Amino acid sequence: MIEDRKFICASCTIGCELRVTLNSGEIVRVAGNACPRGETYARSEIKDPRRLFASTVRVTGGRLPVCPVRTKTPAPKGKIFDIAKEVAKLKIKAPVKIGQVLIHNVCGTDVDIVASRDLASA
Image (tube, rainbow, N blue to C red):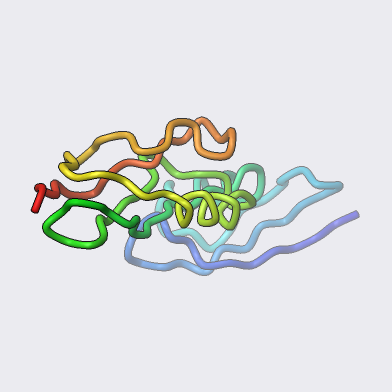
């Protein structure tokens, strides 16, 4: 069964409209990309879509009540809501160092949640 999918490439600032043709779930053609990264992005988006995730967590004893956090690497798109729920439960104690792992292997994704900034104690 032939299927066409369209989406916007997010690998650079051009934002090409990609057209991916699938035959029984297998990619047979990628079109619309202005650079080679577009084809790589399209293949990844079809086979294993991933997203970066960013949020904040509550902090006790810090100069600020929250600390920004993010995934260290892109996480599977289908797990983003589960990751958000886990991060929402988290409460950390100051001080916090940028890059500090706050949740290792969140939701079994092999992706870590890390602090996005230093946060000193109050």
